[in-house]
Image 1 (spheres, rainbow, N blue to C red):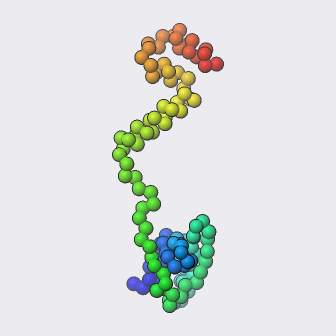
Image 2: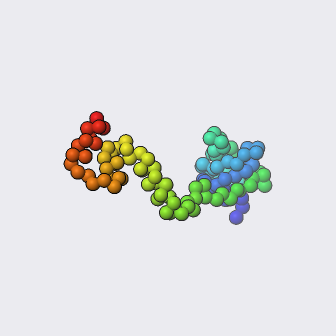
Image 3: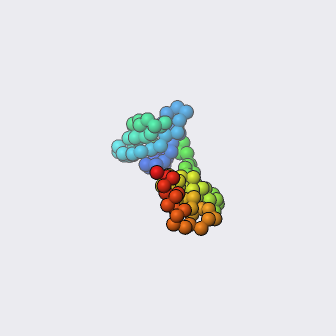
Length: 117
């Protein structure tokens, strides 16, 4: 397979612009020897007609996963719970009652609710 046929949307290509790696957005074939490439580089969109003779100047860059989840699931859950607890007081005025070791009697809950107002 020739390099021009390898150019598909999502491929990363070095050589379209000097010193940059471009992500191919769209490929349109013009005959057997030319491709119209729409690409994105540094948040900017460009368009270029690439001919068969230019294929040696292009290098397809193998990209790994942009975002990989390799963390320990238990640590992620603990981080999530700590964020939940840190923000819970904004939504639950009885958080102190549930988190403490005291017995939640009606008069204590009423006193707590009255102090929140």
